Length: 394
Ligand code: PMP
Ligand code: GLU
Image (cartoon, rainbow, N blue to C red; front, side):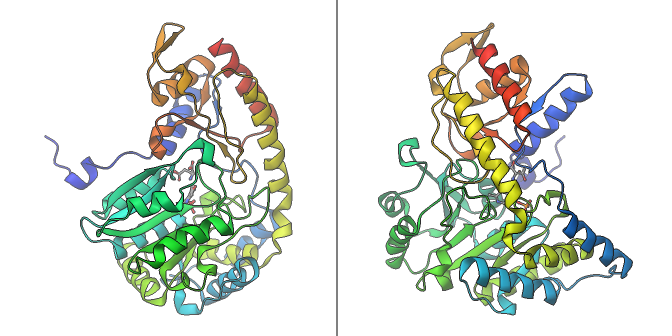
């Protein structure tokens, strides 16, 4: 008999992590799988950051850390927000967490009451919807169009707002579409919110530095949005530190205090060694990670060119992050190699089984017509993967 809570029974498994696990399993069976499912840089953490961690171990950083993070790290975050985002935060407004994922989970649990609605422009990052549901919130999906670069318009936002709307969560650069909201586009959304002073915004900026056009803008930079915006960031992507598990927020102090209180009962402060290393990462000039961003930019062009050669893949031009999100709906209803493809999940499974390439179905991101392909892989892997996909589909 299933003795588990409704909470866990109703929770979806993270589709990105599930696909990565499936690829690992198949590899262990001897299958030559190319993994383009997980959003994880394939670079090593830069040496200057690793050195700081080794130094921290030798200096005996081994005790519990302050729940909201070392004050030196919080100061480095404050400096980073000022330097990169023109945002002024004070110490009580910063909370360091075990990854941006925990930061988001904290926010949901301190902000949402049962039935509160959270507007999620689709496609959204896979975990937003389930993190919201875990806190008894109700995700409200707003479908965007590839022709509008997968961005939510002011009109769409206005139409989605109800008396129950509590928050809006979005990422820019966006996982999975790579779209970057311009200052003008964010201003248009903020203008709608002027009429709704009780709605709060989560601006997830974890891909901030992986931006090929430049021009990153933070919602909290607008004076009228500063007190209503929680800026989420982390080091997983830009510094190739996914396993170190450090994320952070800058927020109105009453929200930060609540996240601190929540975290104090759930996990305590984030890992001591990782926090010391992140001080060094954030104090470094962003030019120290430019070589990775340059490489992602080359790969983006490569994968867009290669996909352009396959019938039935319609893509936007991602301006940031390291994903493409092609619309593959022209394959729906077709039978290839005896397999009928009725939706994006079928298509992604077909690619795994017939091309040995792991991707993620768009359904996990709130879009039924697309799949996500991560190009955080070497150029050779990308070339081989797309060649296999083309062969399997022909
Ligand atoms: N937000 C977005 C948009 C992401 O893609 C991810 C994936 N890693 C996260 C948050 C969580 O990042 P982490 O927990 O590794 O800091
Ligand atoms: N955020 C990454 C992704 O979207 C890592 C996996 C995860 O945390 O879900 O693939």
